[in-house]
Length: 414
Image (cartoon, rainbow, N blue to C red; front, side, top):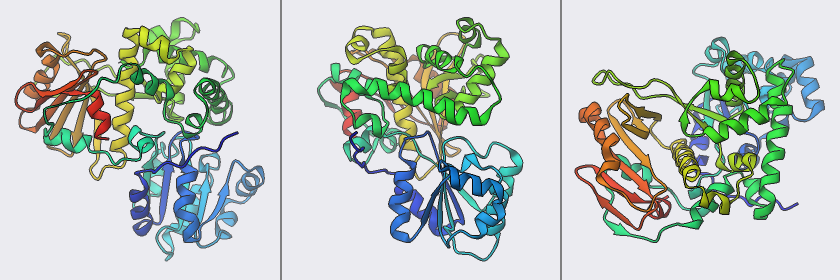
């Protein structure tokens, strides 16, 4: 079995800074996205000892005596898959309060481990959380990204580039998991399907007493077909014949293990006819394509589904870039009751808003900017700029702070 090639992770700088000034640092994200690789790349040269709670002996020892386990740890420790031992958090809090150096604990987790207010509050001021995603395209290419800075500065230049064409579908199907990318193209779907099954049987089982876990892969496949659309619990419930409350609970479970994302709607006091329903996204397009049995050739022919997966791909790509950005960037979608919409609304700080509309087509027209112009009207002075990303050959201006940007250029500048 080939070893995944190490790719540069642009979250590394944030991790080093966090260890320098915070007692506890948590890296969370989906299994197999590279959390342990990154933690050990930073921790091993600095003398961190590594313990994983996927190891049954370490798990049993920590569960039997969490206080003693933490007290007997070396001066600096990496604790992997810490979500499996929730009883450790009070012990970690106690040690974090003592006069120990910053960077005492480096934790990794494959689920959201701080959802409970008490647990989050107990470590307030003592923990910094970093979200690690599967690989971004710029990490695969080994080039630092510039797209977000250019977007908020509305500084895109007129230029030409080649269409991505069939290469676009290939990127989407490949996904971003290092272990999948290390395999030959034909073997990646099997890895993704096994990955989902293992994740549900291991991490989801730890989160719930739900007996019918076998329904979750089917539900996830239905969600893959709906990716980038408004969340419709009724449609998700129809095929597995589940109740709406059960489907809602299942979606929450799949979110907690980073297989699904809900993108909230953007709201404004200036507009009263805005849709409030969130959009549903798969966490990675490689997973989506594998669950649906879609390869690059099939996807290239199915233009409607290509559009959905491209929107998912760009959303996840930008979230990955934003995760190591110096400023917090929050993501929403925009849609009003007249049908005007913007796929992604990005908010940086309190005073900067940008919009990104995504098209799989090779042409762009003024009509494609309808939603962006409404967003500009609603955001007022906060509007930094908007782009329509499309698979064409030309990047060009469509007015003040509005640009059509070729996807080839998008990937060149990331």
